[in-house]
Amino acid sequence: MKRGDHTTAFRARDGFRIVGFAIALSLLTPAGNAMAGRGSEVRRVVVIHLDTTRADDLSCNGGIPKTPNIDAVAACGMRYTNSIAPTPMTSPSIASFMTGRLSNRHGVYAAGGRLLEQFTTLVEILHDNGFVTGGFTSNIIVDKLLTRSKRSAGFDQGFDVFKAIYEVPKPPDGIEANAVPRAHAPPLVAQALRFIDQNRNQKFFLWMLHLDPHAPYAPPAPYDTMYLDHPELISSNVRLHPTVIHHQAYVSARLDSRQYIARHMGAVTLTDRWIGLLLRKINQLPGKTLLLITSDHGESLGDIGYWFAHGANIRHPGVNVPLIIACDGVVPIGVSDALVANIDLAPTILDIVGLSSAPLKANGLSLVSTFSEKDPWPDRAIPIQVYDGGRWRGVRAGHFCLQSQFYAYSGERSRALLYDLRNDPREAIDVSIGFPEVLRTLLQVEDEWFGQQRFLVRDLRDDPEMIRRLKSLGYLR
Image (cartoon, rainbow, N blue to C red; front, top):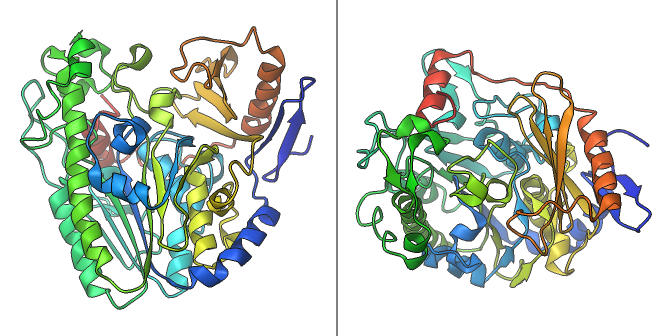
């Protein structure tokens, strides 16, 4: 079996075939040629990340939170129902978005990771091809610099303007006073609007990362209580002890689960409101806008006994993320069930605007093929992992999900779980006994991919300022 970055295929006796994690430039070329003419009409590219937002946090995906502005974008674009973040933590997820590479290929495995300058990014390619580039984030671990040590986290590569906007919100009841430094959506959007006004006559790329939905879920009134009395939250309410909550750093008292979840949902709705203001400004500009709305990772809200635990496992609440792509006359209106990931976004953007993604040497594929085909890659497999001592690795393929747990010290696999997402979307029942060939095939894929793993970890966890930031976000205690 050939190792490397190109297409790797396995065929099991039951005919289950996996093809995954390919550069597959031959697949990208036809779509790119088809899009070249229409892509030249695109005057601006806007990518909006909602931090810690599940796929089912959006009302267009059947969620409880009201997201009318995002829903309106979905109604005139392509909405993806099977989009994932293969490493569900902010730093590796944003690195994958910017490079089109999986964690094994860009070396960012955990929160606080550093994106090295040796990797070409989407932003650099757009900048070098005439786009004015602006990035705005309220997540302190993907700032461009640690202010005291002047060490770079590397996420500002290619940006003409890159700003991180922080403030310290008043914590809600039951939350300790040392709340996360962050900006709520208003000052973040204000900076983005200023960038738009300054570059309205230029081609530009705008990227935003909204932190509001992240713990400790501290939206202002009325968003803090607007979902508190929702019947689903009331019926599923349990009394939480701090010891069961991943982000224990925040909790100073027992809380009802619905208090926590309602605040998270309210923060999603708050972010949607300000996204609406941004979109109204963009819609007033001449020419076409390519718009992508997604999330860096999801959040566990009591699913399978996990509370607020993104980055601690590779279960669906953290891995599955929303994805919407829209551009009038360029991206069709529809819904795609194809398996896609954040590594696909940079190749897709470059494909649509008529630029080559070859410099990225990406693992991802352009999603332009999904505009005309129901599922261009029915045999696709994508490795997933969390870098917590290398304890969880797996593979998403079709409607199956392999999740393997490893001993932290020996690195040996302790168990392998297989879930049939078609019949068990909540991953409650291990079906490995019923599908031995599928299990064997996916274990081969997992071993093939992670056997190449070289821990080129370049994080900033030895920096006192980054340690403080990670603690404030609940990643370290």
